[in-house]
Length: 95
Image (cartoon, one colour):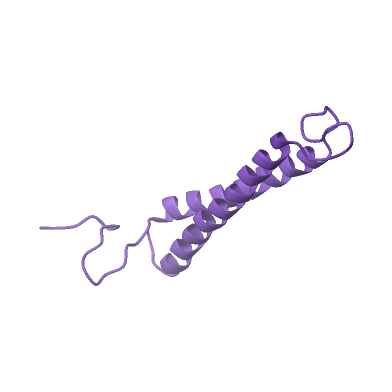
């Protein structure tokens, strides 16, 4: 019985394809780009959503800051998985 190139068997680590590895790495980079931009916009918000009349953060600010932090962490983890997949494929022709 033959296994697909990315299939894992006991004792053998999973190998990602080059395409999947690049996608995961690009997703991680994209996530950082998007959420850094969002946090900058959130911090500079003048509409009253993120900060009240006294300049104190609102619930909207804290919820969206938490979302950004979680997205940074997930984007980093996904990007690292993609980077490790690319490093594992280095030097392998045609994958």
